[in-house]
Length: 331
Figure (spheres, rainbow, N blue to C red):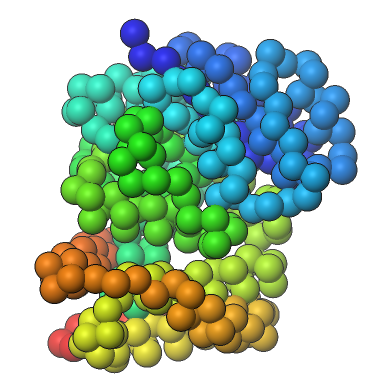
């Protein structure tokens, strides 16, 4: 019988931690163990943890999502690793449904449907895709739920808001990239899964609500900085020089539009600082790659971008993707 270890990274939201721990205890198939990784909280988090039969790992300061998850995995004994944010509310049968589907499909990982708590008719997230510009799309974000988001499908990029992984995935491709700190570390992990030929599933019957970026604050300057930086670091880490040249125009367009999006949210300076910081770190992220790796990288990003275009055309283009594809579709 499968053993499931739940890992909850948390920071200064004792109320949300109590909510997710209560939620997990009420699952029709609860996790076999729960590991809370406290990123240096100064609120009532330790008191909340005492109310539940969980293992607590404490850092003296906030070391970011990736470090917290990696530490949780090191403490976990399960053959399935369930990573879940503290701001998620799972339907009672969520874990049972997603575990059953993953086992039926022999999937390496699985994610479900995330809805908005303020309007459950809207999608908060499903699976991820990434463009050639390394701009990731949380598929369906802020779109109405419907048939597109209600069909089980194979995926390569699993958002770690609430995701179930076989332990062997981490044993095969390693831990989360801690240099990303937070944001895009799951996209990076998805690229590595795709490179390793690992696939997962999206199971729409596993439904949860997600309150989105509640720890750092939705669209805060810090979120924009990390997102802007880590987009460029994805390029640095995976694109050989020839790929950078071949994809130069999509990269330029996509990164410029990402700064426009940051400006629209009132954080242009944070976005610019993020891009500059990534350029400063560029050389430390570079990797050696063979011609075969180069072809595979280009195929992964190109196919993912084609899927973004297909889905956007199906549901109606949002402003970012309309502009992006109008400028790069033939490039």
